[in-house]
Image (cartoon, rainbow, N blue to C red; front, top):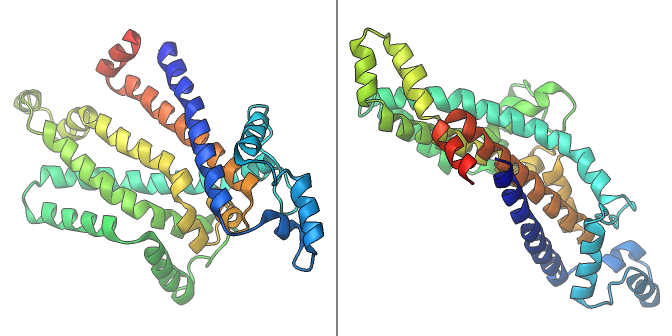
Length: 310
């Protein structure tokens, strides 16, 4: 098991190199000038040039990149050009909000998708199955920003049940979590249905029914237990993807998470902050996927046997 974990961690290092260089290069192509942003609107060209020289912006791209990367491997992700704030501190201060949003969203996904997927599989080819499949397709197709705006119009502006934006109270997380969770729940519902259909008519389930085991126990313990691997796979991937994919929803709801922080940094051409957010989110996503992979061993003994052999 430990050899497998070390192998996955070793893959993370070249991934950080790749992501950081791509982001660094893309920021180089952006039209904004960080030195001009720091100097201010009324600064002279001489003042801007001095700042550019002090920050090393006149150095070649690769020189600046490797200088930055050297700091990263020492725990220094640079300083934001706005407010002179430490990038790592800024990221960590926003991370709890994104984690809070991701946990609520994945909870919504689980409580919706698994029961509906099981029902659709049990009622295969009936009107119930067709209805749930149609709803799932609609949920996957709806753009997140549009759904978020509609939820704000209905539940915030018209009914006044939830705050319009921000993270001022516990109820603030409900609408953005639902917005993020609808597409994920729809996809997980279809995955659960497919996984259940592979096992719901298996021979060992017929044997259990013949022995007099109650149908609910057959479905929810034996069938669902053996169908969990693909379900855990998709839900785990969705959870890790929420860290990087929540930017639009966070912007719609003015949610103070890492997605909003990244968008603000991109708009301000803050190279250090954008690159730091990209690297830290890559690490966070990779660690989450690693944890999901390890969970497989506790769900399916066959997967555990493969791990032992690595």
